[in-house]
View (cartoon, rainbow, N blue to C red):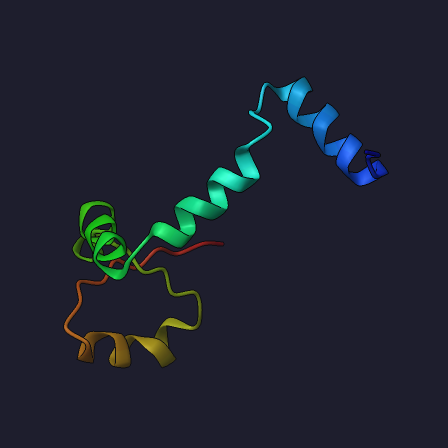
Length: 80
């Protein structure tokens, strides 16, 4: 049974970096085993929208009123 050059390159690269040769197959199996509840659980554990910061770059005079209407705290930074 022969090996294509792509397969041989993958085998050598995985060996060089210490990656298990079954990695692509295990990865595929793990992705297929994932369901929406596990994705939601991971999102709830790792994503924290209340802690996000939004950076707006633009002319302060034309954007300030719209941003204030959103009711979010503003911190203006002047860059010269």
